[in-house]
Image (tube, rainbow, N blue to C red):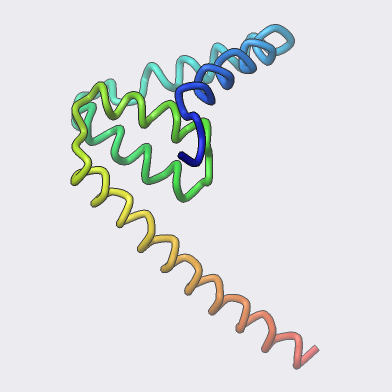
Length: 114
């Protein structure tokens, strides 16, 4: 076990309460953003959670992983569906590393001229 994800989720939520006191407007806006997500009904809960978990991988957000893994379980996501979504995240990260490597080579080449 890499992390105790249920414990991490609970600790994150508790720690988040400390943010809402000094910045209630920002916390309310964040909660409203989350509540509005998916409100047009185009994607079902399973698909939204699969996307959220793939994005959580690409942004390296442990709190997001904990929250959306719990929500994915509740939405009925299967291990096979999750594996496919995470495979997409892996492929995109590799693609992004390739593109940014090309950018580095381009930048490096431009400094030769400077």
